[in-house]
Amino acid sequence: MFNLIKMNLYRMTRAVSTWVLVIVIAAFGMLQFGTLKLMMDDPFNMFDGAGTALVGTETMTGTDTVSTFLQNSNILIIVSIFIVIFANAEQKCGFDKNIIGITKHRWKHTLARWISAVIGMTALLIIGYFVMFALCALFLNSFTIGSVVAILKSAGLMYIGMIAFSGLFFFFTTLFKSSAGGIVASLIVSLGILNLIEMLLDLLTKKLISNPRFVPSDFCLDNVVMSFKHASAGTKTILGFVALCAVYLVLTIGGSMLLQQRRDVK
Image 1 (cartoon, rainbow, N blue to C red):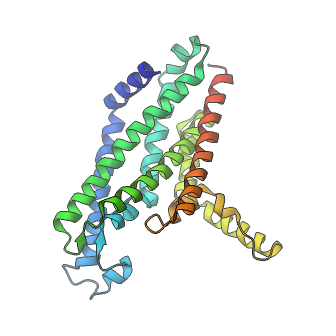
Image 2 (cartoon, rainbow, N blue to C red):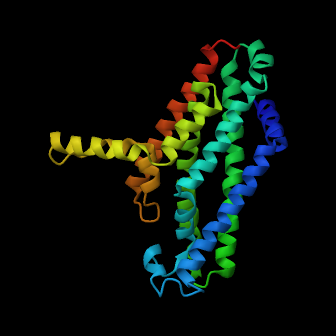
Image 3 (tube, one colour):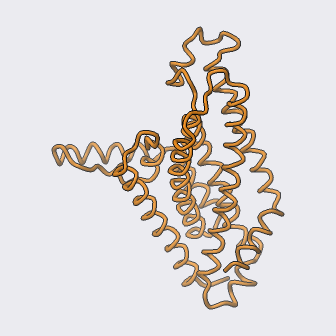
């Protein structure tokens, strides 16, 4: 397993697409900083003091930067593109036929591939967040670091959500055996296209059941992760969030491994 991961990481670091996405996510971190700088410090007097009202806070903390960076549909798009391109490369380059096709435990290759993808995704997120955080700390007048523990708590919880998303994107790519299928499925999730369906299901549930304890959107990963209040979440809420992410991860990665094990290699 370790050798498979090393092999995948070697290929990942040599891929042009990996370095392109490194540049993209670093540029996105700079863009996020630029947006915050314009709205909060308003150096060109564009908002007449209303910029902070649009952001929702007068002082940007390290915890706020976690929300701004990780709870963003553009980050999900970048992550999904990375996962899909990496997961699909084996089929495109004949890797499945040449190596997986001669082994009995093909699920190990799928697991190693996903672990490698998570390592690469983690590196991308660290680079992007570091760029944004460093620029905010150096050049944003209304920035304060705040509690380091709170930053680590928020970043850790959002990272768990990103890992669950990686499993979802990885499963779609494995299911369709195509980067096109994986990209389309991941964009539907990333762009919030499912939100309308989730809202309609919530309304239907409330019509059928008065004061329901749970609604369908409470179990939809996109809604839960993107709206999760990590900074103020209590222990019970955090455990529920982690449990939901774990369920999605087990189902998606387990499903990917099962598909690879039972599927004919062509």
